[in-house]
Image (cartoon, rainbow, N blue to C red; front, side):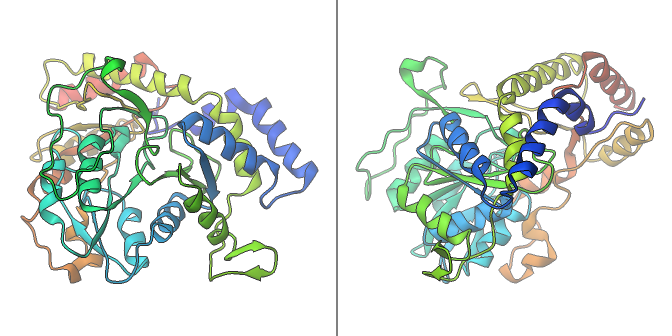
Length: 395
């Protein structure tokens, strides 16, 4: 029996009556562009994420691009982010005219190492883009503190983390020009010492992808930006619609980046199940962890102050035999993937930035060791045990 990375067909079969009905309703009403389902989804996502505004756009990439532009990022600016991410994070920065400044990652979470960010800041730095990679939230307490100290925007890349949560302790204060002090005691799940926040709700804007394989996936491309800033929300609504607030009257040059009504209708159905699905993903991660005990495999680290959404379940194996393991597992008809095989600072597209091998050693080590295994809510305990047994025999 083959085991895919994500079984979208199985999910559809279980939701078929609801999905089909939602699509039929859109076709019957024939409001395919910015129909009522788009606004309804925006309101539901905003409520779910605990923010005031949500704006649907055509893709997760567009969400990043429009959020950056709306936050004032442009030519001559610098934006700090991770080299260990999908290129949408960085290509959208370049498309604003700004320059990407890479900073290395934490070897446990694979997210930006907050202890290295401050040394990358210059007079040109205008924003930080943390990526909640694989579904594990970045260190938002530290990142928000740094951002406030230097008056920087924070745009969260939540493409892989819909529904993930972070127990935040950071409170905004007048710390500019003061030595940054961030609480370093062990994180706690005691709500009296923090507040659980959905990813995307802590920075100036949060950007989501509804690519089909995501925790909350459409049946095509789609994205969304969430924010508590009314000006940001209003500007994005204009930019996504050709720079127009009133039809055929244009205040600026915009984009064609509207979330399709059919996709919004599908996502409305799926949103009802996201908490259940994310909990099943976490349960499956527990199965993986238990089955991998007493092996040479490094399972995902989960900080005690986060609720991981496990968009991907990514292990690490020695670089000496990672590729051999992947090949052998795939031959058993078990799908795997490497997110990501070459850090962005070493990619041809970014040769002009002047980075070289060895500049970001943690990211470079991870690219040679990570291996993502099947992960989806419908994955069974028995399937996970089968996957682990195959890898156990190879390591």
